[in-house]
Image 1 (cartoon, helix red, strand yellow):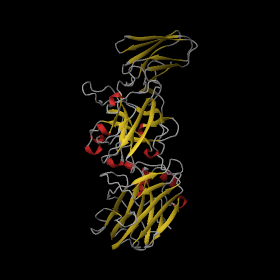
Image 2 (cartoon, helix red, strand yellow; image 1 turned 180 degrees about the vertical axis):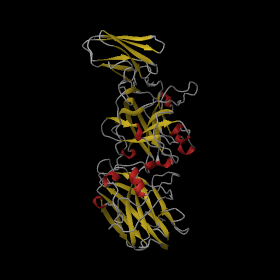
Image 3 (cartoon, rainbow, N blue to C red; image 1 turned 30 degrees about the vertical axis):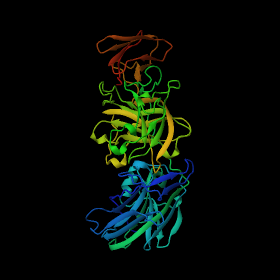
Image 4 (tube, rainbow, N blue to C red; image 1 turned 60 degrees about the vertical axis):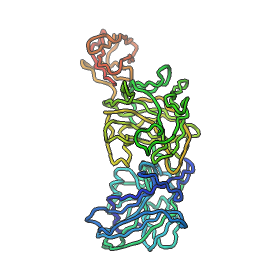
Length: 527
């Protein structure tokens, strides 16, 4: 039933009429777009948007337009698209419902069907498609190549379910690209409704009409966040989370752990709110928060409250290095080779499923990363505690930022775990526990300078020496760049390897001296 004419759309003109999502539960639930509860937070990209395409002046006339509005009083709740298709190359129009805040993807691979209730002022084909943030799929979608299904809709209300097995690429496509519906559904960001010029020539003039969608329900899936790509948590590492003793708030980089909310936001008035950290001794003073030293965890219990356009969030954060001595603010630090982060995350039993999980953010200095445009990735809610190893190269800036900077291990300010209200909820209470936070630097053994006696690799505040091809005991001496002895250690004849304490950020060398082995190894610094 897929149409035989191209449906090209290279640019979107969005009308930000925001709706919300109601998620019944996190397991095999139905995700419902609720048109009866409009949320007019200005500038938010989650929700409904209207667009016309293509927007190239050579491919449509000035008369080509589309407008989106909410139902008027007395009408059935819904979104109303009015359009005039005018142009020589398949002018099209449509609107969509975003499935996640900030255009970040949901995992809908368990989707069973798309339940829609809609009508058109005139009889015509309406194509319902799945939008994904996969790079190849996004490029293909810009030329009309998207998994979807064509419905013949008229003035009478159509109430139908599109089975997920019926989603397909358009028939006019010659030579299918290497795209699969399961991949697209695994990183879904929106459902779109499209109308297009249906003349064989592809040219339409003053083709007017309207489309009303009263119901959109994704059946059999609760809209869970996808699992982030796994990183390589091997090689050198530094622990950021002791969470015990007198310096429980201090991390392995010399920075500090702390919490903050929209109540002390300094980004804009629209992001300020009254969210609280309930695990602080005094909820009016965030400095009274401290880790749970008895359990070696950072526990952040929160109450999120939406008051302004972008309020309703709280975060647990640690600095990438020692803060400014006067302001205590994070100072940008370079971390060459940094490639992955690992941590253990446990959600409280009453963690609100509507929040989806925790967003991991890596903050960098520079204009391109200001005002919430941090590199980030979502960590989905799980019922039991879980150890995560995340590839930092998978972090992306939010889609609304208009920037696509990739991760680079320089100018780092802080790492944060953030919770945020989504959809139409105005309040949420919950908590999570964080522990075993480690930052990993790619690579393992460092080749010796003199001969192949073995290898040295750094393991946070220690180095590990492993012998290769020789026997007997040996004296291992760690010296700094001025030749001062930092430590002396003995590798026994029955030992294959040994770990030695080595200060971070100090250039040093390991001198190996034995009856059958002698050599010097450079020791990598980990700042």
